[in-house]
Image 1 (cartoon, rainbow over the protein chains, first blue to last red):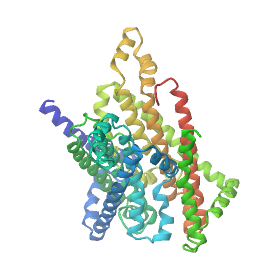
Image 2: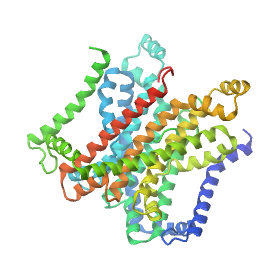
Image 3: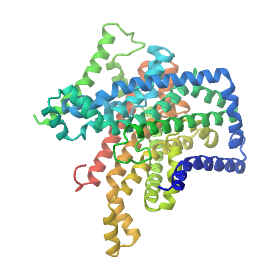
Image 4: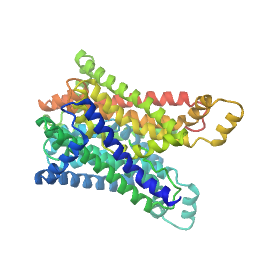
Length: 261
Length: 253
C-alpha cells in the first residue's frame, strides 16, 4: 500500500461521518420541520449536555455499568463457549436453553428484574451482562469447534492435561473468533445500556435522551444521539485496534464487523 | 436411542431444571407469588390469552412490524451487499459509511425516528429495518466477495451476460452466507420490535408487557416474554427449513 492509500483508508470513515452530517444538514434545511433541527444546531447543543455536571455524572455512571456488565459477561462466557465447543455433551446441554433465550430482548427483562432487584445499578448491570454473554458464548463455541483436531492430539501426546490443552491450544486458536464475538458484544452492551435506561427511565444516557424528548428540547435529543453514536463508533474502533494487535498472526480479516447479532 | 435424540433429551434438562427451580422458589415460599407467579399459572394464562382477540391483535401488530422491517432490510441488505462486492466504486463509497453506521447503537435513533415519522408503524418498522440491515448487508458482502473468481470468469467466457452471472453464479454461491445473515437479522428484528413497542406504543407485545408492569400484574408480564421467545423459535425454525430447502445439494450446511 502506498502512503496515499493508507491515508485514504484512514480518512475514509471521517469523510463518511462528515458526509452523513452534511446530508443531515441539507435534509433538515429542506424539510424545515420544527422537531428536526439541523446538524449544526445539534452539534452546538453537545456542550450543553457535556457541560452539565449532573448529565456528565449520569453518562459516566452508565459507562461504568456497561464496563462491569461487559467484563463479567466475558469472564463467564468465554470458558463456557470453549467448553461447549470441545464437548458434545456440554453443547447439547446448553444449546436449547440458549436458543430459547436468544430471541428474548434482554432489555425487556428490565421490568421483571426491577421487581426483584430494584431500579439500582445491579439490575441494569445484570441486563447488560445477559445481553453481552450470548454472542460471546456463540462465537467462542464456533471458534473452539473449528480448532484442528491434530493439534489437540499432538498436545495430548506431548503430555498436556485437558485443562492445559484448553488454555494453550484451544484458547489461542479460537481467539480471532472469540474477539469477533467480543466486538459484537461490546456494541450490544451499549445498545442494552441505552435501551434499559429508556425503559427504566430513572438515570443514565437513555434517560437524558427521553427527558429531552418529553421537554421538547429537540436540539438536545439530537445532540445526545450524536454523543451515543460517537461512543459506539469510538468503542468499536478502540476494540478493533486491540483486536488487530492481539491476533496479528491470523489471516488478514475483513475490516468490517462481520456479525451484529 | 440415537445420538440425536440423546442430545435433545440432554438439552431439555436445563429447561426442566429452570422450571423446577422456579416452581420450588414459589412453593417453598422463598419468593412471594406477587413477584414470581408459579409457572403453572403463567402457562395457563398464556394458553388463555392466545385465544383472546385483543392479544391476537397485539401479536399481529408485532408480527406485521417485524416482517415489514425485516423484508426491507433483506432487500436493501442483499442489493447493497452485492453491489458493493461487484463494483469497486460503490465499494469505496459503501465501506466507510458502513464502518461508521454499523457500530452505531440504532436504538438511540429511535427518538429521532419518532419525531420524524410519528408514533405509528413507520418509526418502528424503520428502526427494525435499520437494525436488521447491517448483519444481512455484511454477510452478503462477505459471501459475494468470496465467490471463486474462476467461476465468474468461466461463466463470462462461456458467453453468460453479467446480469445472468449475478443470478446464476454469484447469488447461489453467496446463498449460505446470505442466509446466515438473514437468520441473525431475524433474531434482531424480534428483539428490536419488542423494545420499540416497550418504549412507546399503543399496541403490540411490548406494550402488553409495559402495561402489565405498570399495573404490577406479574403473571401478565411473563406472557409476552414467553410469546416473543416462542415466536423467535418458530421463525428461526421456519428460516432453518427454508435454508435447508434452498441449499439442498450444498455440501455441509
